[in-house]
Picture 1 (cartoon, helix red, strand yellow):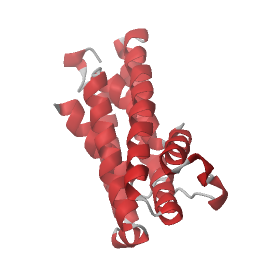
Picture 2: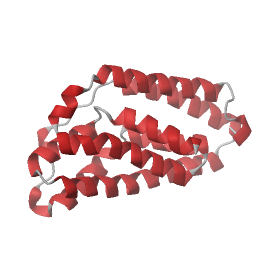
Picture 3: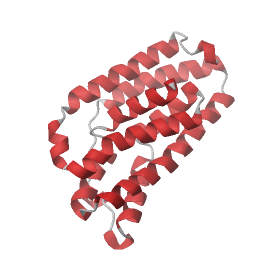
Length: 191
């Protein structure tokens, strides 16, 4: 349950103001059809985060516990710094509507999530907790918690939230996870 809850919270906070959330705003404005946009986001996130979590689980098996502890601890601290860098999206990155709203959203979201903060966080969380399904379900729920309001409320939701505060909270959580991992908090599970 811890893997699910931590994954949900981390990704929900990390996604606020992220380029994929900005993409959700653009898609909502461009297509004005929230249900297929939300469906596309959901499917793209499940596939992307499942692959990311599989890599994280594989890393758990590949690396020894000591090396994994240092990589994850320093990785979480690096994520704390990275999350403080604001994302932008270019208007020309939006998908063409010739594919239909669902397919355009699915493709755009999947590609935008490649190498994104939340995808990297998913790899690290899966490696940290060695719990593929709870991490994927948690990170997907976190993405949906951040992006569904973006689709339905659009830019009004973005202006109602202080991004610096949200990113600061997420950064603190990443630092705490990093320091705890470096200090051996995961030794009970082999990290």
